[in-house]
Length: 93
Image (cartoon, rainbow, N blue to C red; front, side):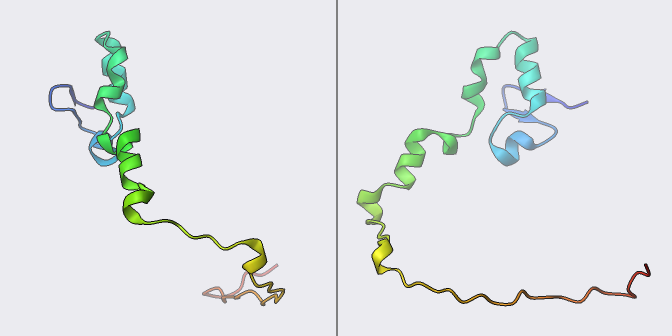
């Protein structure tokens, strides 16, 4: 059994703390206490659209330059795979 505390936003499984998203125990508790519309209030702010847009704002960080297909060099060289010998005695057939 896991212990859920809504006021401190914790669950003893630590998934909510580690991932920033409510775990199944937390969601089950919200459903049991008929608070099932409040799930989004317990999601960490790092998953919000505004924080995502702020982190990847091209005006602040500069622009991303991608090469055009005409600027890429073709390379048709096929290299041999790296083969690692397995440890121990080989298995008999």
